[in-house]
Length: 243
Image (cartoon, rainbow, N blue to C red; front, top):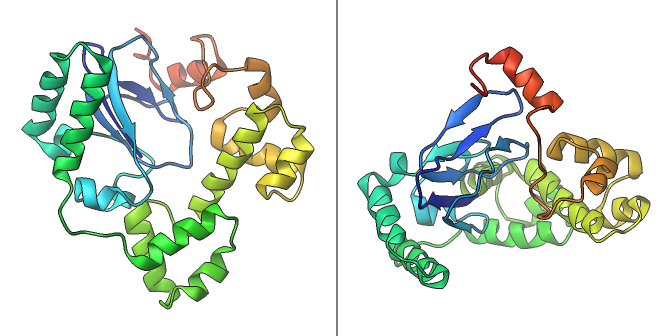
């Protein structure tokens, strides 16, 4: 999950995998997701933060699953405080000072006493270490149903889908490092290279080979031009797109 505040007049515009377009204004919550999306990448003066898993309830007061797989206007959650913070940040010219102000604003919204459930904190650490979901659930001391509810509310994705995203993150790091794809698949926990390719295509929208050919400057952002198959499909679904 991430928060983004654009400090100029360029709104956040995104398209989902079906080609549906959303214009989201200047302050946005991007929920945790296991699917890709396309965004307008015009240069913009921006401040933002990527949040740790399970930060949604303490910081935003909303279960993460209500924000997952989509973008939400920050003013729908914070009200006038979002516009006020954006205006305050817009007056600060130093990037370091703007980040410090933004961080202070986030810290001020955290309640003094509100912790992540111990079973969820344990699970997040275990899943990062390649532990099996059923083993973690069994060690949590909760029923499977109760654990699933707590985890999904805190993180935004069910445990198995969350682990799928974490595994993809490991694979992405290996692909970016130039490791052989067979080795990437083995180290990340895939059954074979074909499994890696299917998952990479599903979560990133491109194959590992195509990703390497593109060689994006930032590992989580792949450029898509207006002539791509994505936009051709989106225009058929939405004639106003690109007008």
